[in-house]
Length: 570
Image (cartoon, rainbow, N blue to C red; front, side):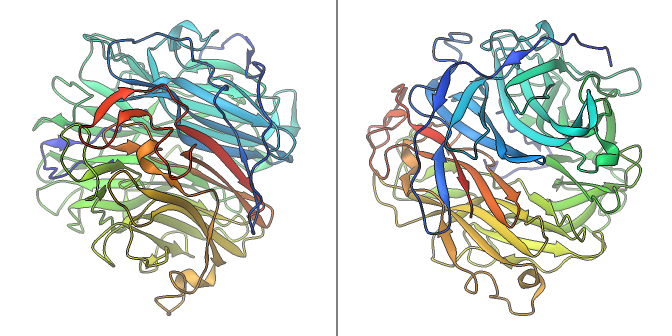
């Protein structure tokens, strides 16, 4: 999603996203099995995680009348692979996306045989999910994320724990309740326990959770990362941002001269039984002018060789002096990071990597269904950088959308081999076909020798047709820092992961939408993409909207418009 013409008076929200808790098991195994075999491609195999009958919330009516709900749509997946059993993969996603933020709930798919059979069920983060604890009884959930870490409470040296998080919130008129929720699984994703809201205390200065009556605060875009070091078994980190305004109505963009934004952090060291009080790790303030800025898309990677935590994000600097909080004067979107060498207790100041020069993604050959006029907006990961770390060397990589090479959005990458002190010049990843590329992710093979980037790219569009393909490129790590400017874009081959589909089949949420992010998992020497695509190829027979051509009609069809897929062996 892109917010255009932002100023110092605007902030961005992509709202879609202690006390010991009783061990109440929340089962994913609902009997919804997906056992369809996917197409074998030259580089790997793709299997469906969901299908037309796998929606665990198909009978839920919570929030009815507060927006358009695209029943049977799955968007914005993430995934994790069990480090002790690579046949065990968990995918999470938004189920039944709303037009104006979030979904009926978050769902999880679990495979324990490498992807040919998936079990789908709900996650305990919203009212639609049976068994959700009282403090997570919200109307909607968004921003799914999952991460595996070593050990379980019963045996710190065996098995693995999966950590899942959500942005849970209310959307009904007069309600702004919202929080970040967490739950864990000790059995590979079959059951989920210790579901709870994260909490602030008197030192935080920000309410977590936020009450319905408080329209000043909204939490957004959380992620969770398990520490991969067995010496730190049971440790995981959650990071996100919170927008703060004088009288906030969050579903719209924040327009207030006095807005603030803080980056928040919490961790568990006991396998998700409890979480530390939320702490501020970045207040985003230009101290010389008292103008406030923000981050979005915070994601932590951990260097297993040193234990250093790196939090990557988009640091958005607004107008004002270049002194104080913005010494380099890089107004606008910036790919940035901060790091901690003491397990998250203290953090460095934000360090800028490069300007993030997205132009947004739209299609002049189709129409915005809210106006019946071109262009058709596509909601993408355009303001969200995505990082990865080489597990063998600690080298850092980050990808993002950028228009610097062609004037339209493409995928670029930068790398650092000295802990972030220096970064390579951004280099284009996607093949320069003349068509827009968007929503990238990056991973490094377990051996550290190969980097992979996954992304969507348009074909040639026409009225009623937006052919879109999910692709992966693999290349040696040396290609990123090579002096050859085309070592990746024309020097590496893009491999289709799934089938070409029509983006106009997707639900509409500020743009045609399959997710602000997808996932790319390193598995041995290969990679497993987790992604969403339309279910009916390049036709419009599965469109989530009644009509996408003039006269457009956003009334939901309730068709199975999109599904989650997982590739293996790429």
